[in-house]
Image (cartoon, rainbow, N blue to C red; front, side, top):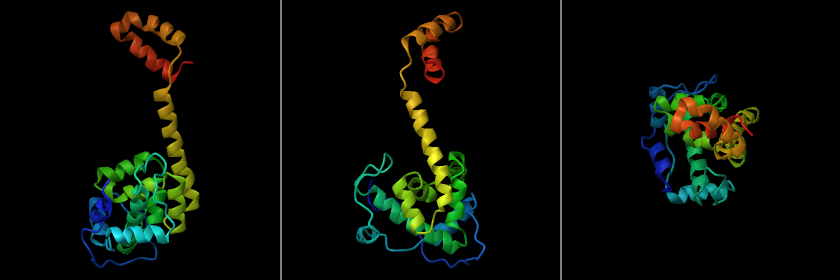
Length: 202
């Protein structure tokens, strides 16, 4: 990943004035709202600024979890999330409420993505899925402690699906179900049997 790609995209347009409200709510899943946030994006997005931010915040330059595999990936996402929060707030919306909505499930992020806001919210969303990112977001006032459980549930579900996909079904189960499916599935019987045994069998 190039170090400045996400931050440069966020800071493409600078300085439009928006009114902050005391009763800010979650960012609407609307393309226009995303554009308003982008228009309010600012900040120094040079490599030096990113590295200085991460040093100041004590963010390690190393891979984090399975999502941030590059040495500087987590650092870049953290800095980008920081700028995104400032832009969302300047536009009059609440990052905390936005992440609270996203904590309700993967489908919430998909709703934003379908409206063209996926790239904008990806840094915040990805950080919220790992303990190190959650700690950073809570520390910077972007995430409520009470919403962490929702993101943890999403990751637990993903791990369960991964384990299910990688699970090797027992030979006895496959043999039994293959015989059962062979009359109707023909050459696909074994494949169907393996899928069934992965999901339901022993």
